[in-house]
Length: 336
Image 1 (cartoon, rainbow, N blue to C red):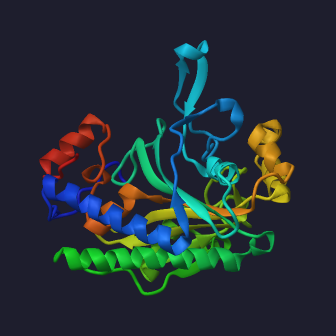
Image 2: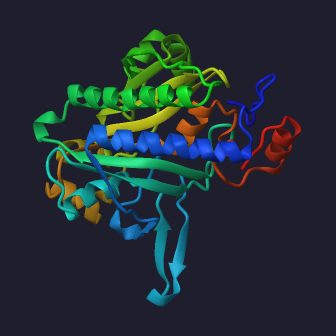
């Protein structure tokens, strides 16, 4: 999308004070509901990790994490998390969770290499969640069942917010539409992945795009995924059509996590065999960690969506380019 897009005749229905109240309303309702439906317990999570642990999320493999040294520990280096995708699986074992149980936590990250626009910020806040499954549940049916549960929570939250605020209308369809990245490429062969997402989201209202990370028949991946947490054949994004900006808006990314075979294949495919000897990856290869499914749900993204805001900076505090701040001020878009 463009660097900053201001919808014609846009104005926020809520002032800054009421926006803060509404943000808390969305977050309190949704996190309570998702914890209940997925059987998740809230836990504390790290803001930074040891770079040598292999626990940090490498995202698409090119983003630079924020690092700093710790004076008391002889200059030991620490790395601000980019997500908790790997840490959660390790934590489920460490904290003694059992089959069918899971955890969720507030994840705050700094993405220093992010290109900011209406929906992207240097600051990332999301609910990270993870739960234990059986090996035989590592299949698409399990993935789809969890996607449907998350989507029902999104719909119920929208319904709740529509009751609380007269200006909010329900726009999410009753059911979410499932499609794989290859099926999407076959449907729109002459378009880019982002264009495909837009067309299918606008047509269906809400879509679950599955199997992200591996190469398609055209030799290109739909999108990048780190090779050592999601199984590329068993992951998905929940994307909705957002009429305020006329865009496809990703609200959640999730997946069944790699087992030994998937990890070896994906490390080799992505040229990341050097990670094999890291502690986290060794724990997977030695089958010391539970089989899990997990994901992230963008806190500011869902607040932006449910409150019908035009810029993510209206629901979170961050640093923005001067020209973006000036443009927003000119058009009455109040950044926090």
